[in-house]
Length: 444
Image 1 (cartoon, helix red, strand yellow):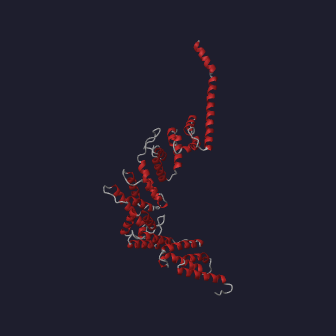
Image 2: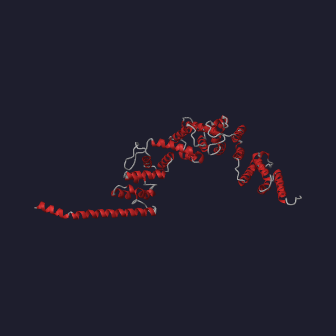
Image 3: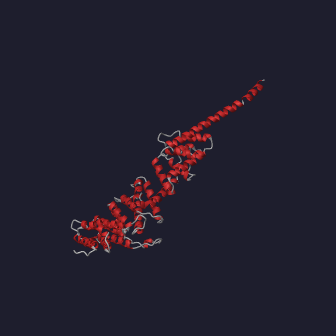
C-alpha cells in the first residue's frame, strides 16, 4: 500500500482498523482484541468508530459469528471487559444496563430447564424496560413508574427459590437492581417477595405440613431484599416481627443465626437495623432482674440500666446479641455505652454492679475506667474500693501504661492513708496531758 508522504502514521492506523474489522468478521477474537489498545490512541474518528463497534459486540451477542463450541454470550462478556478498560482510560462509566443484560443472558442459559421460555422473555423485557425508563426523584408513587411482573412470573421465581436457591438469588439481584434501592423493578417485586415470605412464615406455624424447600426460599428471599433509607410502610415492620416470632417459637425450622447472616450485607443494612430495633423492643419489655446488688428493676429503662441488665444475663451469647441490637437501634457504639454505664455506676458508688459489668469481656477496660472515674470519687474509702474492684483484680494482660498509672494511684492512696493515720496518732498524743489530769481528778 502506498502511503502519502508525511501521513504514514494515519495511514497505518487506518490499515490497522481495517485489519481489526476483518478479524471480527472472521471470528478471530484474540487478534482483534490485540488491536484495541493501539486503536484507542488513533487519530480522527477511528477511536469513536471502535467504541461503537465494541458496544455493538456487547449489546448484540446473538449476531456474533461463533463456532459450534463457542457461546456468543461468553464472547460478548469478553468484549464487555475490553469495553470497560476502554472507557476507564477515557474516564467514562460503562452503562450498567450493558452488564445487567449480559449477566441475565448468561444466567438464563442455566435456567432454561427450570423456567418456561415465556417467563424468561417476560423477565428480559422487564429488565430492558426498567433500564430505559427513569423514575423521577422524590415521586411518592414509584410503583407506577416501574415495570411489573405478572403473578405467574413471581410464582415461578418463588418456586425457583425453593428448588435452586443460588441461581434464583442471582436472578432476583439482577431484577431488584442496585443496593441503594433504585432497582429496575424494585418496588413491585420486593413487595411481592415480602408477601410471599410472610405467607411462608404463617405456613411454618400452621398445623399442615410445609412443602420442602420453603425455609431455604425464605433465607434466599431475605438475602435479596433491599431496604432503603426511607420507610416503605408497615410491611417490613410486620415482617421483622413475624421473623422474630418464628425464630423464637419452639420447634421452628428457622434459625436466627442463619437469618441474621442473610441480612448482613450492605443492601439490607436498613432491614437489619429495623429487625434489631424490633428485637430490642421485645426483649426490653421484660429486662432481667438478676444483678449483684439487685438494684436493677424494670422501672428503670434508661440506657445505662438497660445495658447493665443485659450484661447481667448469665448467657454471654444472649447478652452480646441483645446488646448489639440495643445499640444498633439507638445508634450508639456499644463500647461507648459500656463506659457511660460504668461511669454512672461509679458515681453512684455501686461497686458490686460495676465489678459484675466489667467481669468478663470488658475486663481490659477496667484500668481505663479507673483513670476516667478517679475524679468522681467522693472519699478516700470510695477511691480505695474503686481500685480494689477494678485494679487489684487485673490479670497480666492489662495494658502496661494504664496499669502503671493505676499502680501510682494506689501508691498515692497508701501514702494518704498513712498520713491520716499519723495525724490521728499525733492528735491523740497532744490530748494525752488533758486525759491524764481528768483521770487524776476522778481518782481523787
